[in-house]
Image (tube, rainbow, N blue to C red; front, side, top):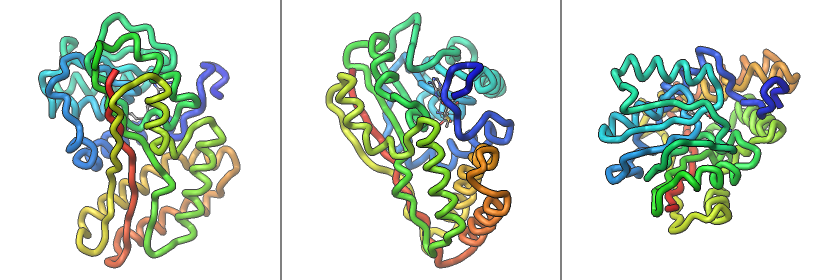
Length: 273
Ligand SMILES: C[S@@+](CC[C@H](N)C(=O)[O-])C[C@H]1O[C@@H](n2cnc3c(N)ncnc32)[C@H](O)[C@@H]1O
């Protein structure tokens, strides 16, 4: 726990490089995520864990009619999100960010849609988030959640320097109260929280020789993703600097190998209030 704020540790941290990574991530995974999201009938959208506004940007580009309220508990993320929205010319009538803990929401409006992406994995009791947002949702509001299912990650050829680091990274996330497999539980969590018509699908990447340019891009993105946990893993004594360097060199090799394979599935849920 972060003793000053009483909130759980956050594996990726809030450095400038991480804030840029979130923007890169939103672009690299945009198509697999958004091809299955339709907010054309939503006007007031609640975005939980809005970070630096990387997904907010995509949402407003794809659904320009939306008015978005982003909830985020870290002030550095909100500051960056506001800068990003100003840069894009989205004024306060289109988007606002509220600094709150999503497990204890106190909002002033009601919403006909909710978007959550890569957030519940960091929260010790995700049902608290799903229940906390419910009083602010209109009847039949649509809820769209995209979350990790990290045990699906597979690479060919097997590189122990990558897979052992990945194992340590995921165990650390569990140790700080998160759940790197939370995608698998989305159906149960939504049902327990009282949502109806729950629908699940899995999306992701299966990249090989046929898709070399995309494979290179995704390996590079993944290297940045798992490197973002390195400073906390080093601080906790769970990895050595040499292990981090070896993992990164392994990812670089995979990027350039014609025969390498990248496989990963995330889980998407749609449900209604
Ligand atoms: C991996 S980032 C994802 C951000 C954004 N959804 C995206 O895809 O770019 C997760 C964000 O959730 C925020 N977060 C984690 N737990 C939270 C909580 N309990 N309440 C509000 N925000 C939270 C973190 O501060 C972080 O900015």
